[in-house]
Length: 214
Image (cartoon, rainbow, N blue to C red; front, side, top):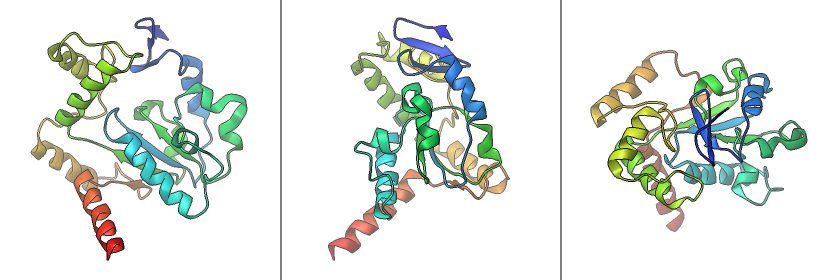
């Protein structure tokens, strides 16, 4: 584990707060047993992760699941945070298990390629994402504070400073749409992966709100 600063460390291009994980733990995820009923919300930071986490946990609560936990981080814990799995806690969790993660594909459990666990991959326009991440880095005490937006822009592109290496980087709406079409036309996504644009999902939620209001 490479120590980037007093509070930040890096393992195989994955940056994290030093208090949240260890190299040994992330490496151990290569033998993590995935269940067919598992749900993984995967995203790059500041893509709307907590918002999506709230939606997913609320859906499962309707069927009586994860109601024994109090907070979203308990209901849908971060896979890469070592304290969440203390004493084999993840193994003992009843199905369906819900997980959140910022890990890239190479660090995720290989079992996801063999099992039928559901994967919700959340993406956000990189221009909006970078702006949100910049302000977040300036306010969160655990992250390295950028001296300027220009410096943060460099971090964002290179995976330095407080930034993770990018999962993807479409630089305009046309390229983003092309990437979506590419994913849909290839076998990159399997039937256990939910792929939807934020605007479409937001429209669906608004339609539910209007229906319930009538």
